[in-house]
Amino acid sequence: MRLFWQRVIYCIMMFLNIVALLAIISYMIGFFWIDVTKYEIASSKIPNSFDGYTILQLSDLHSKSFEKNNETIFKKIDAEQPNMIVLTGDMINTNDADFSVFYQFAETLTQTYPVYYVVGNHEQNLSLRKYTELLAHLRQIGVTVLNNQSVSIFKDADRIELTGFTLPLPYYTNQLKDQVQKELTPEILTQFIGTPQKEIFQILLSHNPLYFDTYSSWGADLTFAGHIHGGIIRFPFIGGLLSPERTFFPKYSGGKYQKEDSALIVNRGLGNGTVNLRIFNNPEITVIRLKSE
Image 1 (tube, rainbow, N blue to C red):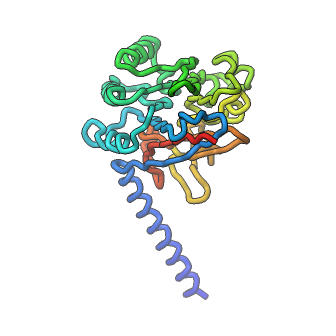
Image 2: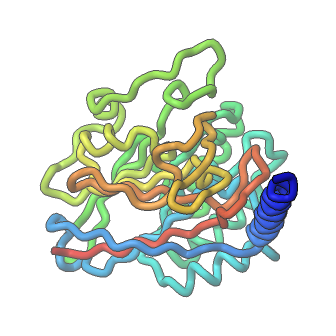
Image 3: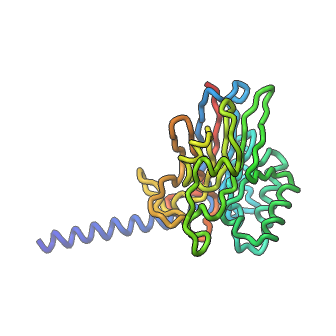
């Protein structure tokens, strides 16, 4: 019996060593390897002229740079030939001394593609002066900043609608001291960004995916979000372990989610945020192709 338990313990230790080794390898791979994840979104509301229209999403850069001047990212983006690029927040860190990495990154993108951007919690935690300077500089270099605003995207005589929602900090967990996290209802969301036209295909950009039910009820046909960093550590068939909201096994950690006719795409992000850790969770570029039904 004693020999049996010795073998059991030995097998357990070997298993743990293998898992630890794989975790270390995964962590190292995340410094230079970027996944490109592709989805197709089909809807009868998508006009025929937008069939095959490609949207590329980037999120949570956190001022990270891959190789020299993020050349790795740009090569992968150019290979997809997107019609537009959407940035869904936390592209900088609140405590950055400057935003030169993101500025250079965004300026390179705008030289080739239309770029649309919404802020995350890291941008909103900046001082008012830095926040204002950040948005002003991005507009100056050609980024369309959507601060509770909508724009129409035209192709031939058809259009789809793109809205950017700045989710206020009180709707995040643990972002403001001594305050309880507020509940975001469709009515409150409407106060911020208005009412969508139901016959027009509506895309919503919002940093935090936590309120997908609200986004769907409001009228978003397709929502892009980030924020969760893939759950930091990802488990097969389970998903992410921990969110920046300090919750375990977050409901929307990364990937595509569906609620009736409304879809949510959660990008796992490019950087690491305040938790400098990614295990079984490579940085990610998301590519979405629209299909007219």
